Amino acid sequence: MDLATTVLGFVAGTLTTLAFLPQVIHTWRTKSTKDLSLRCCRHSPVACWFVYGLWIDSMPITLTNGVTFILAGTNLILKMRYG
Image (cartoon, rainbow, N blue to C red; front, side, top):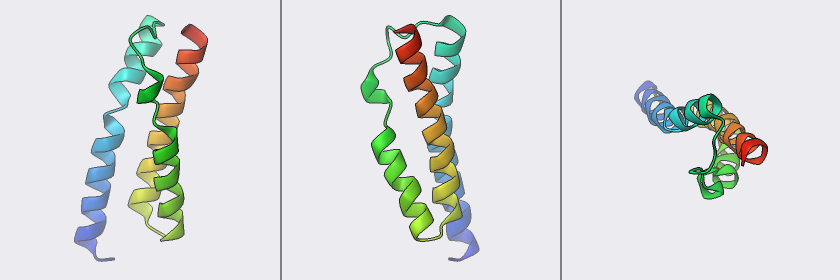
């Protein structure tokens, strides 16, 4: 994999991961999950992307989807706790 592909992968993955952050912060602060749908906790696809990244030895895919999985998991835990 060349440098441009790696950089593009990290940029795309980072932007995708950051999309989960505002919801986690909002839910954590307000302790309210009434507006949080369990469908937004996309664990299965993210877990598949993580495993795929490991399989093809792609650091951008593995790292960004690992962090996204943690953020989505945080939302799920908060939904179960405060929902």
